[in-house]
Amino acid sequence: MTPRLSIVVPVLNEAARVAACLQALAALRRRGAEVIVVDGGSTDGTVESAQPLADHVLRARRGRACQMNAGAAQARAETLLFLHVDTQLPDDALQAIETALVDPRTHWGRFDVRIEGKPALLKAVSWLMNLRSRASAIATGDQAIFVRRRAFQHVGGFPDQPLMEDIELSVRMRKWSPPACLHQQVVTSGRRWERDGVWRTIALMWRLRWLYWTGTPPERLAQLYE
Image 1 (cartoon, rainbow, N blue to C red):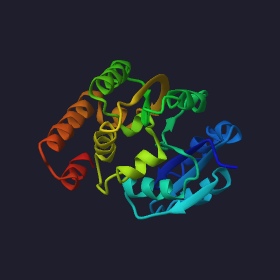
Image 2 (image 1 turned 180 degrees about the vertical axis):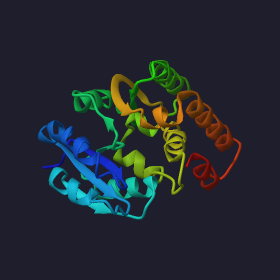
Image 3 (image 1 turned 90 degrees about the vertical axis):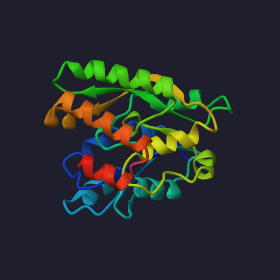
Image 4 (image 1 turned 135 degrees about the vertical axis):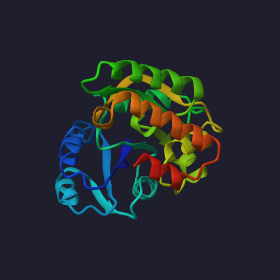
């Protein structure tokens, strides 16, 4: 039977988190979704933790874009969803995606995001991220991008670059259609925001976006991000 949805999860040294991520997807698997984990060369037991909890565990060259493209190539559903390991889907994700794609003119979409963490400012950051996404028709990986397989293949999938692959996919996809911006929320970890500070992280993200739009190579941006 063809799955209703293929969920692709790229991972790298996520042994401490991958089991919780995949356990949270168990209900979706029971309702007809398949889960594909794509490892980029982990050395900490990530693969072993993932294997009992996923339909497929693949290995690919390190790099989120490359890993997600590898997962998409193995996926069997007509709709693909790309999920970060520290992001959790809402319980009604499958129904919400199928409803959004009832209109044949809609080819992709994303969820609203809520950043989970102690700083109170993260609530405002989440709200602004969702607002900006609606205004720009640009989605980020934290928002759990979903896309029709045919459209994804037509635009060449994710570009093989070390950063901003989600932004570039959005630019390509919005030429096909505006995204379905779902109000249902995914919950993503605020670990980086807490570690580096909210204001510092905001400044870094805006700097990276500005440099990207002005032509700075993604390889240089990846160095700044790390």
